[in-house]
Every structure is written in structure tokens, then in C-alpha cells.
Image 1 (spheres, rainbow, N blue to C red):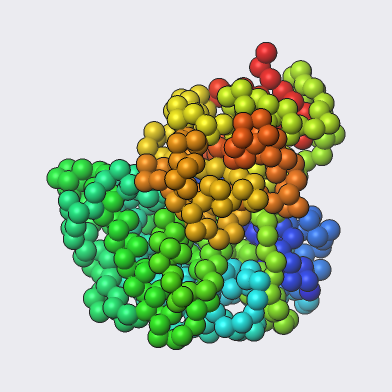
Image 2 (image 1 turned 45 degrees about the vertical axis):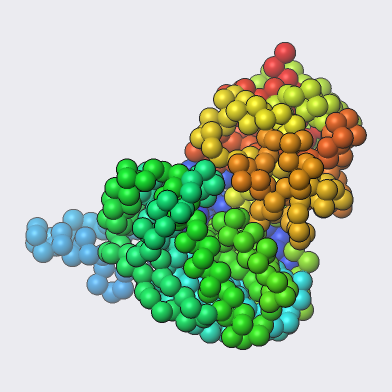
Length: 566
Ligand SMILES: [Fe+2]
């Protein structure tokens, strides 16, 4: 059975599941180069079909969408029932009533150069609830199928904001859902907007700024925006005011006038303290919710998705406070809306098949380019290059010389993190490297931390009380004896957000880190995404080359080729 998952909205994406395995997953922004693109994921769908060798859409069993109602654009792409109904478009009706004659159609329709995936009898288009698709991404990527509490927490989707589910076998059942009275994501985003960062994009910056502030100095000033849970019960609703929307990058972004109130609080207390208080409230609220439900149900295995779960400090807080109440904390590594295509696809697949558990151990699910393809692109640009049998060794040597290295290998990662296939790397050994990589390459705010990749074998040497962490989705405290050894990747509060790299999952990247360890004594490197601030992570070799020459990166390793600026 083949299921195509499609998400049209903030972070549009497509994914394909064949025989229970995710074969491909990609966000449209990687093709359109518009970050968080909300366009119809036409290119992503095309890529997914190629990956399973499907030329005719009707070879697909189900197309599974991430919304309860079919987005108008998807109705047109898949040639479903007329999304305008019998009366035609509103614009056409208005034109008729004003002019007394038709002024033509303003209906949305695909230009002829786009593929029209007309569905016939066999393929079925299925709508799903947004939060249920989030829940499916978390539940159906667990290693087991036993009873599990699932928390889906975002701004809003299909009007749900915070939902609690129970999964068992191949069933997911809704236990409780909260709407705007408990949108923890929107509360945090109001603060993000108050800090003048984009709602639905800048929340990571709020989290990065928080450790520089002291929440005690303004404790309680953000209380009205956050709901209050006691045990599992909502005892006080939040007061967010009216929600408005705005279109940014082709998708809906929300806005609240209350951001103005937060702006005034920032003037009074300072940016750092308000960010710190927002983070404290987020953690307190979700900890009460999660531990309340764990105690009420007695279910100790938990899974999580929804954009709020990108908050790695929250995830650390849950993990460090789990005691014996939580025995499994599985956060789907692409928990925001870009993970909905996978969620919708797995959800539909397991409506028809038994779920026994899934070894979901990597996110290398995007496009790949052969050495031949890369070489021809280098040749056309008259770029000098060297073929290396072992690029890992040379890259490690350059990192040990404190060079900035771009690393482009294999299939692109899905989700927001670069995990060693589209990465910019540097040595973590010098504190000033953080400023250097910002000044020469990333051009982003100086307070934001950089994250490390380390060999799986060395994890306990660097991290306190850690679990297996392959996707940079949870932060941990650095061990005391390593804190001063790797200052470029330790945040001001002594935490780091690691990627543990296993030899069998990504041998070339593992070898690079291991080689760096042989030279320097530290099996850990600074890993930042291969892009500059505000742009999507590079997808293809052309974009990699452009980013390389448009920044202060010293060397580019692309497939087996090595390029410098000498
Ligand atoms: Fe969502």
C-alpha cells in the first residue's frame, strides 16, 4: 500500500509511505526557496512520487491531507469535486450583479504547465483532523505499539490548540481537546511578536534569549496569556484577545493586538526578562498538563508533536523532571506543521494495517545528488575542485585548523534541523568561533546558541542524564568537565542541544566527527544549517555553491568533491 501525505498551509510539505515506511518527506520551501512556504506543495509531491517510481497518481492508494476540509488548491490539483459549488465564484457573481453581464471567471485553476493529478477510481483523497495528523506523526514513529499518551500542542489547527490522545495498537483516541481558551503556542507567539519577531518563525529566538534574563524580575506579568492547569484540569482559561491573520510567505500567520501590551512590558522590564518569563510560563503550563495526565491515567509512555514541541528547553525540563512517572518521552523530530505530511500519511496507512512499532532512526528523506550530477554543475561554473576518496578525513583536518566547512552529502534532511547532510561545521573548541561563524556566514543574532553533533559513543562524556538524541529535539546540561572545553556550543545556561551520530546511520558524518576527535581529543563539532539567516536550508548543489561563494565559508565538501577559495 502506498499513501501520499500532503500538507497545504504553513510549512507546506509532502511525504510518501510505502508498506509502513516513510520513503520520502520534504517541505516545499526547499524547492521554492521561500521559508515556511504555504504554497501548494507541487514540487514536493512530484519528488515523493519519483521516489516510489510512480508515474500515474492513480497507482497511489490514498492521498491523505492534514485538514478536516480540503484546501481549495488541493481540490484543483487532484481534480476533486468543484470547490466553488454550482453558483460559481463570488467574484463572478459580484461582477454579474454590478455590470449585468459576466466579466469572466476568477476561479482558481492550475496553469497548463503544472501536473494535474486527476484522481480516478482507485485512488482516494482523505481529509483528517490537523491535531490527529500531528498525533499520528508522534505515535506511529514509536518503536512499540503499547499504550501511550500523546500530547499535540501548537497555536491552532482545525480550531484545536492543545489535545491529549491515547494511542494503542493502530488506534488513536481523543481524550480531551482545548481550543483558544488554552492555546499555549499562541501565548508564546504573542510574546515573540511583542519582541518584533515573526509569529510562527521567531519562537526559537525567544527561547534562545530567555536564559539571558531573570523571570523573577517580572514574574506573573504574562499570566493572562497562558492557561492554568492543576493536575490535568484546566482551572483558568487564557485571555488572548481576538486573533487576526496575515499572509506571510503564502501562508496564514496569526497576529494579536495583545502583542502591543507585551511590547510595553518589554519597555518596562527588558527583552531578556520578558523572554525568560515566557519560557518559564510555557514550561510550567505544559509540565502541569503532561504530569497531570500521566498521573490521572497511570500511562507512563508519552509522545509529543505540534510546533510548541520544537522548544528543546521544554523537552529537557520534562525529561529531567520525569522521576519514575514518565518512562518514554518520544518527541516526533519534525513536530511543527512541516511534519504533518508524514503524520497524515502514517495515519491513513495504519487505518488499514496493523502497527507493531517503527525504528524511525533518521530524517534523511529529501533529494540526493550523484557525484556525476555534482561534477557537471561544478564544471559548468568553471570551479576548480579536487576528488577525495575520503572527504571526512580532510574536512576533520580543516576543522582542527579552525576553518569554516560546508558539508553537503547524501539525502537532504526533512524538518528544520541540519543533521550532517546540509550543514556548516566549525570547531567547538574556541569561544570566539560562535562570533566568527555569525560574522562570516550566518549573519544572525549573537545571543543565539550553536548546536553540536557528537559521536553516539561519546554522549555520556558530554551530556548529563541524557537519552538517545538523534535529532536535536531536546537539550541537556553539559558535563562539568567538558563545559570549558567546547565553549562554542554551550549556551549561557550550561545546556546544549545535541545530535548523536551513529556510524550505521550516517557513516561519512560519523567518521568526520571521529577523525576530529582523533586530532583534537574532542569527538564533537559545531553543526549549523547550510544557509544564511532568513533563507531555507540549501537543497541542491547549485544552492550550496551559491551559499558557499556568498559567505565566508572556507571550504566546501560536496559529494566526493572538495572546493576552496584559494
Ligand atoms: Fe499544527
